[in-house]
Length: 405
Ligand code: NAD
Ligand code: MG
Image (tube, rainbow, N blue to C red):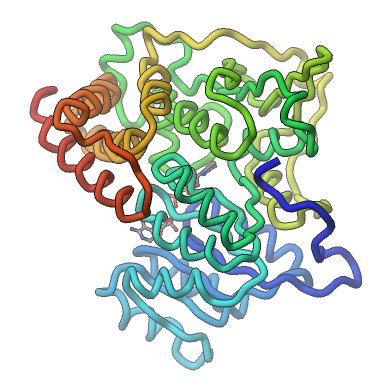
C-alpha cells in the first residue's frame, strides 16, 4: 500500500492519549461532519486549528465549542469580524490565504484537509510536509498534483488516509495486499440525480436539479460533479495515485444504492468489497482512528431492508466526463491539473446559470483540446508547475465560456 505506513499508531481508544487535530475547511460538509464526530468524542480529540473561507459565524461557533487554539478566516476582509466573534475566548484569530497555510503547519497529530477545489492545494501540501497524519478529503490535490503530492508525502513520511468514501473502502478492501495479487479496483458511482435522464432532458437540467443528490449530502461543487460523473473521473485519478495499480486496472460501475463503495478483485478470483450506509462520517471516522475504529452515529446497514443492490455500466455517451478524465490521466503531466481547473470554472458557470448542464463537460473537453494545442500539457515536476497549469486552465476555460451561450 502506498497510503499508510505499517504498524500501529496511537489511537483514541479508552485510556490512550488524546489526538490533536486541525480541520482545514471546517465549515464545509466534510468539516462539519468531522466536527460532529469530534464533539461526540470530546475526550479523544484536542482541536488545534480550524479554518474557513467566509463563514465567520460558523467558524467562531465551532472554535468556541471545541476550545480550538486558532481560528483562521481565508477572506482577509472578515478579520475584524472574526476577532469580535472570538473576543474574550483566548482563541487566536488570523486571516488570509497565508494564515490558512500557516494553520496547516501548526503542530497537530492529524490534519483534516477538507477545503474544496484547487484552493486546498497549498494548505494541504503544507500539512503533507509536516510528517504526521493527513486525512485527505480534498481530492483536487491528488488530481492536479498527484505525483508531486505523493512525493511530498513520501519525503515527509506522512501517513495519508483517504477520506473519499470509495478510497477509504479501497484501503479497507486492499488490507495491505501485495500489489501483484491485485487484479482490479472498481469504484462505485451512484449515477447522481440524472442517471436515468435522456440527453434531451440533460440539456435542460437546472442547478437545483443537479444539487439534489439522491444519496449523499455534500458541498455544491462535488454534488454537481456527481451529476456529471466528473466526480468519478476525478476519483479514478485519485485512486491511480493512492494505490499500486495502473490506469487500466481501475474501473467504474454504477450502483444507485451507494451501499458498496469499492470492490477489489484479486488474482485468485476473490472480490472484497466494503459496504456501509452512505454517510461520510464513516470514512472520516476511519481516517481519524486508523488502524482502529471509533464509534460513528451513522445509520446501520440492514441488507434485508435494502432488499436489492444493483449495478450497471456507466453510459459514456450521456456522461462524457469520465472519458475526458481518463484521457487527462493518460496524458499525465499538467493535463489533470488543467482538467480540474476547467471543471471548477465550468461548474461555477453552470451554478451561475451562464452555461447549461451539458456545457460543463463540453467546456472541460474544449479546454483540454485548446491546452494541448497551445503546448500547455507539459511535465509537472513541482507544485509551482501545477499552480501555473491550474491558472492557465482557469483562464482558458473562462475564455471559452462564450461558446455555449
Ligand atoms: P464544501 O463546499 O461544503 O466546503 C468547503 C470548505 O472549504 C469550506 O469550509 C470553505 O470555507 C472552505 N473554502 C472554500 N474556498 C476556500 C478558499 N479559497 N480558501 C480556503 N478555504 C476555502 O465542500 P465539501 O463538500 O466539504 O468538500 C470538501 C472536499 O472534500 C472537496 O475537495 C470534495 O471533493 C471532497 N469530498 C467531499 C465529500 C462530501 O461528502 N462532501 C466526499 C468526498 C470528497
Ligand atoms: Mg467519493
